[in-house]
Image (cartoon, rainbow, N blue to C red; front, side):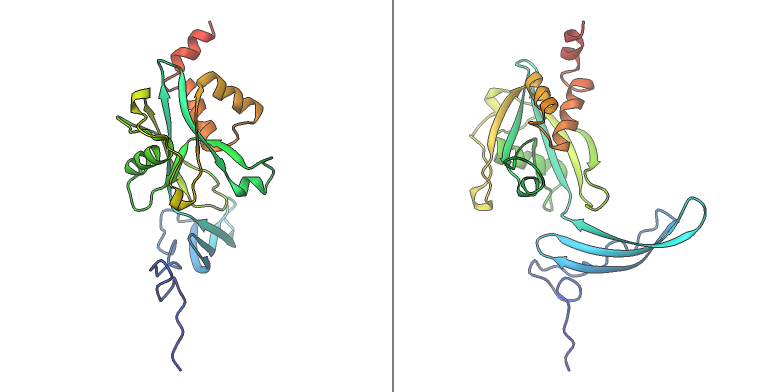
Length: 229
């Protein structure tokens, strides 16, 4: 009898991937964690794994734990800002996971973002800025990297900021129709954007982090200092 391979493990899946059960098996950075087994639970566009590992607790005891992790790849996001006019560029689009978990209409206001998809983070964020916002960027600044849901999702998001002017907006943006994107571009005053955070109209974590950075340590910090005098 011929052995039947497992797609994504020892034979290619629909995206040509194998070895999806190998992630984490070679980790050595934490001597208090020893990975014992990795199971591939699902491998659609993204990958769901169940990992069994031994963990040394703070009191010295070893325990065996299991965790499921969802791997959708890493991403990049961007806050374009126009200090002279006091504005930022954001997007609004329908997000089903938010809709099914309490968002009234599922329409979230966010910084433009996307998966890296084999690109470096800066190239990816330039791509997303042009596709979603219709903006061609000049200089960009890498602000910080964040894990958005580290209890279960492996994704690390690289957060950028960049200046823009009206002249940099070369198209209407809106995303790629062939990828099912239907994105509205919003230009908001920084004070208005912060007010939307306060009243819940902006509830996306990466967007809140970048807006707060912008007024505490970023391009609008002098503006906020003057407003507080």
